Image (cartoon, rainbow, N blue to C red; front, side, top):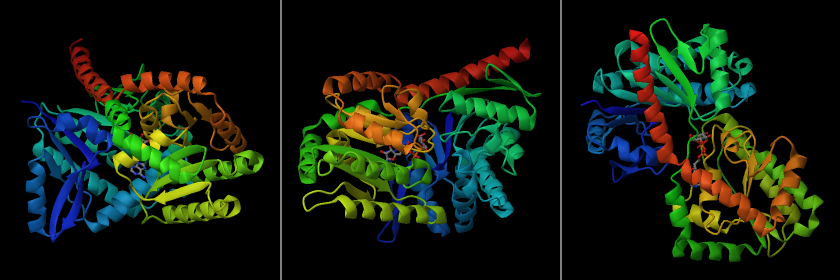
Length: 472
Ligand code: ADQ
């Protein structure tokens, strides 16, 4: 029977060491939820790095056996591969370039070579499992070369690729010394998916200008076969977020948190630590807002959660210091005994806590400089059980294409953000409800399950179309 193989850099698990033994917990990330019911079926399998370097063969064997029971297969990466392929080429070359921070990008041949080697390692692991009728769904920028490596080994396989981060305009993408190889890697797929139409357009333009293949309605005709490029905006598990936010326990917690803040209005911001998320710019806007509208001093608190991420990378360390400094300065300047303008937490929180915070907040601030999609804004909208609340959303997030009922801002325009804060904090509740209910409709309909089935259906359609093209 044909099966589905999902491949991503990380498996949907967290490995933890307990009394000398490695145990794992399944993660609750969006992708894991969306694909959860699929990869656990029959012979389907999810292949990826388990999130920790495991060197001892005995331990590797044990982890492999444990994961196999859950339809997962680990790819063990070495310390050097993690440093050069993951932290290096993926996060210091591709990530900044694709988020239009090309001034942060490092171009080092050694990192590139390890990136190729690691992609090859994933390819070998997949090839060992895959039969010619199988479907392989590759995820994200860490594995851009994998589709063509797989195509070479398994010419008849069905290969889908989805990129979770933006694809930049040709003028930015062309800066990469390995631009041609990267595109050729992606072109091994039958279907290439992005969150937005703009990402797709940028990709097609780069393919045209760098590799010399034009396109028609998203189809690229290679000499050997045709592939399709399309957009699939990713959704969330709406029912999960809406359901948990409605529970009594979450309501009780939301009340406690709110009372502890001593503020009339509460705003929330939730991000991974990343320069693409626009955290310093948001703090600047809030500082300016408090100075321009002093009547809000003592009345509004921004609860800001930042999840530690990539803290081995120099740029992230610098960003963390910048945020600490700004929060300290703003709180030092405006706080009084009973009130702090910013409550800042640098850690991860369980879903129930996150849900209570979404439920308590009158306003959500989602202001990335650039974001493939951004799921936080969708989680906030789904959690508004009474349909009140205002979303301030950056135009540079993929989600802004779907959520036009948010207050849309350009995160480089601090004055515009200041006015958006004022508008959000003074918006009458009837108006809030009109916008919020419209956004809820959208997110409920285009949820994570819809996203998975759209992608899979399209992939099947491409295979059928390829056959009819070959015979006509
Ligand atoms: P990310 O850059 O990680 O994802 P995002 O889509 O916002 O960004 O997802 C972050 C997730 O982490 C959310 O589910 C959020 O709830 C959770 N989270 C954030 N802070 C947290 C905290 N303090 N505690 C607990 N959980 C927290 C990449 C791309 C995005 C794209 C997704 C999916 O960069 O643009 O939307 O993949 O394709």
